[in-house]
Image (cartoon, rainbow, N blue to C red; front, side):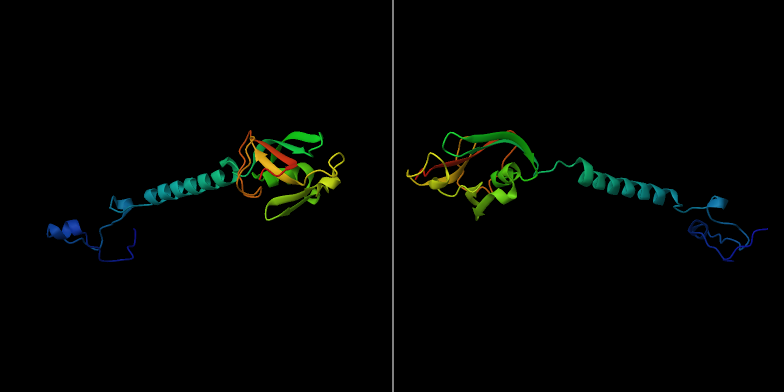
Length: 170
């Protein structure tokens, strides 16, 4: 015989009919009683776990890396010598591509503007340019000189980035 821990159970259905349950009547899911049970809680837990798992998978594996870019880069020394390559870089700025191409230690810059590449600071550092007009490191993206520094201009896949040791256009 089952012992009931709560000797007096009242059901709202029975009370509205004027009946009151006897303390010996069984209630609960085993006796066909009402109650939400565990199923809704299990369903909610599965939905939450799937949502969290999906979010983590997107963040870690599926989301494209917004900074990763593949572009062609050229360093033109202004004397007929130019180095060109297509590279993939984790920094989608012209300066990021240049750092990947020639190495961090081979660049000097001030505020995102390149002042030297491979120890080329002035026209006197380049054979064939000595004694001419002053030259500067200028950069172009797809043939256009952006009006912002090489550290902030955004490069997209397929762009052509050029750093030219050139005469000032101004």
